[in-house]
Length: 376
Ligand SMILES: *Cc1c(COP(=O)(O)O)cnc(C)c1O
Image (cartoon, rainbow, N blue to C red; front, side, top):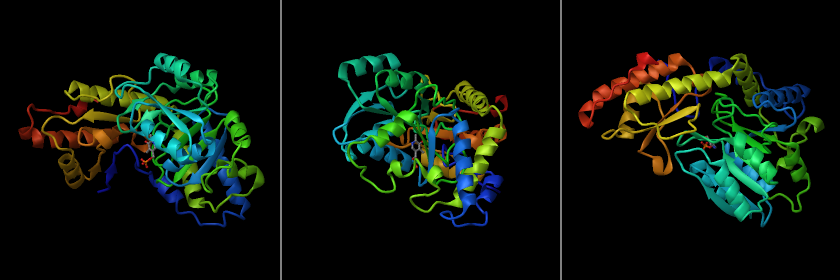
């Protein structure tokens, strides 16, 4: 039996994407074919976020490389950086700000809710000015998706450059890069694109490109220096050797996503059904609003130990689900329903397996729980 990987990333690759990794290789520095493939992939990647104006870059490395590249490339010594957060990844940006010499100022939101744009505006007026703001679109450890459609236009109005981590939302949630005035958008390959990990995709607005070109000091870093990447297509020259296998698989994955049609609606409808199913069956969804459409974080019922549940699902059912991290570890379990996993048939299998697990564990719990998966 094939393992079913239902974690909120890495997600399960399709057979087509796996095969795309097995192309005959070429010399990526010298073969015109590779530049065309890279350019085509970058152009398709922009379609997912409805962007005509942005510059896209694909680097080799886990998505966290995108976060680090953005911080290394945009933050200069002494810059005031607003770190907007209501979750673990958002707060983590502060560490990058310290590392690259910025002065961080945190704006903390409620972890169970989307960022409140009105409160944020008051905070900026009182504590500004800021040159840069960092924020997370979908907080993967807790399943909250922030209203970047309101936040990014506000940041633009206040003259603040926005850096948005959309690693677990890109390809699953609506993102209008140009319309919402997002300056830097960061995505990965192993979440909604359902490609193996190893690629980071970065989109830069014209303002972001100008900001890079007008930096006062040189960028501290080699591979993470985005200035070396923004002109690779025009110059037909990469700063370092690229991977044709990975770019080819991203290209195929983008086609698959685009060919699914209205993939944003697909994610939204399935996510809503999953939340309803868990709620109706007596489980508590962690967020109170702004629910993610790419994953769902659910409170572990009393008497259930995550490691026990994980082991049962893995060993008895060949299914992987997610726990959480940091202070949510052992408190939440997470179901990924992004990309190739945003399919009802996979969710059925998972819910059936979870129901079997709860039937098997009900003796340990203060109440019985059953998942009425047939109602999905
Ligand atoms: C997955 C993810 C990343 C990448 O980091 P990992 O440690 O590899 O998971 C960054 N930001 C968000 C919001 C993510 O979901």
